[in-house]
Length: 385
Length: 231
Image 1 (cartoon, rainbow over the protein chains, first blue to last red):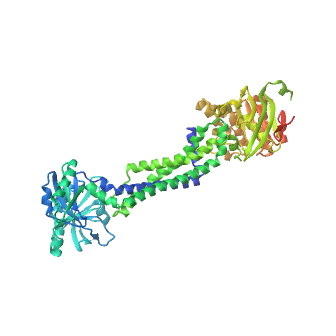
Image 2 (cartoon, rainbow over the protein chains, first blue to last red):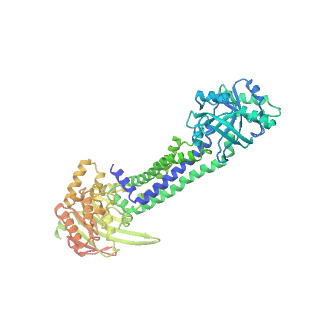
Image 3 (cartoon, chains in turn blue, cyan):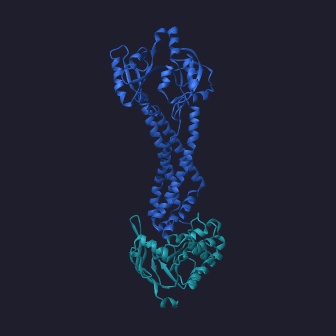
């Protein structure tokens, strides 16, 4: 208790220095937390993928389409429970900066495959009935203040023109990690419009989503689907939703590795800053350490005082950083929702933040403790006065 | 003076040498020191700067190691003790009074005095009683919650004295105890040290430059270039 008091009083002895160090640690921990979350989010699509959903696309590239007629043949493959299909629409709302993920999908089967998108029954019925109906995620609707019944017009980029929709439903995610910034509308609306305007692009889909009964059937069903269209004009590549998402993520792997390295560098930098603070502190207190030794206190007491002070400062910074991470994450989620539809700080990130703070405290204390423990009493006493 | 002759020595120093290494150079500080200090003695060590008097005091107090020779205090050859044993021995046998008081600035007068007792088996209540008694003895019971920065130099030195005597040590070592004090405060401190020697029978070994301080001692020894001269 006595030493706890001594440690706390020592920690706040040079208030400005301590406050600056705490602020430094807090900012570093916040940056570490946000960068770790960002890296985690990049893989969120992969992690939240269902093991019972398969994605089938053109084997050449995702930009090439597949005939809509494939759906009936896929449905016949043993193990297939349901099939849906859709196109990446790529529309923008009013102006290009208002971008969000939007898809033309076969509504009934698609919502069946995605139980994590929770839509009230009346809204679901209205969406299924209205060919120009659309559904938006809760966050997206909140951002643009959309209400059900509103007319929303998207400007097509892949499918040129003005595309008016009526918002028939607003879904919410079953989990915190569910993306609530997507926009879906009826694929038939797209297809029928294309039949009139660009007939050669009609009856084509960008991807098929296939539901299988059990995860262990995924590999077998994937092979069966691809075999079905082998040597056809549009060969397919079927993979699990996780593998499909990983394919996207792997394109940006190098960036993620760089961000991860930066997050560790931030911690190393603050470790050096904290070590410098502790080194200065210990240098100033050599006389006090010598006095304590003179009174009979052994090296363990000196180590306790130095480590205690260092860990106190770094943990205060760490907790402050963790507390700052939440409003910062809310701000990022609100302002950059088109890039980060979900920006949740996970408990693991908080544990890592606190572990990083603790590591900073321990590491920063090693050298000053060694100096304090090894300095001769007579030499230490000469530094007083 | 005669009292030193008839009382048994509490400190016995034989063939003591100490040197410091500066680069490749070996600088002798103490050379072949031989002398005894009687139990209950008040000894003043005087000498010019660099004569080795603080080094000798540090060796007697067990905070520095001699190159050769023997220091027997109360029957214990302290040169044979390990660091941990020496630390334990110091905490029970030696009280330290420094020139610059060496108080911990973030601790109150009470807490500074309590420090040495943390190494004992005393309960918190017993520690409090001891500290209050000693602070009363140095007339600082009203200032026990003050931090060193809130006390005058003389008051700080009295706190340091209280800390030095809280464990009831046999020997008090004082390194220039009045060196940082005004004349009045210095007189006050010297009177107090003298009282500890006379009333409480503490053996006092004091290093000083100040002839007035040395006047309080029963015995004055001079060190000159590491050699102890006669009285």
